[in-house]
Length: 127
Image (cartoon, rainbow, N blue to C red; front, side, top):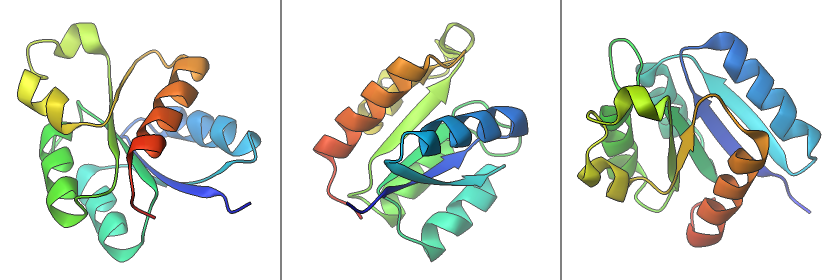
């Protein structure tokens, strides 16, 4: 079975490393990381990913801009937003939520993360 490729975009390096380790331990995913919106967009343009997870609240380029840019670049790729939702509830508009293929709340619950990834992959066609 071929592993699904995931790109994780988040400025929190420790969180990225923990999520990468936990996802790769399942044996199902190969995870690449980018620590900023621009770096993530460069990786997404250069490589194909089955799913992209991006933090919503990042310095310089927020997740809404990253989400729209990714959808313009690769319309079929599922993109999941990751957010401290109670802090971003007014910033994450209904329109942004409709564009995203899922929303993961921080702090990360591993079971919720896996369910959201599986659901987004089941609905997506990129890869």
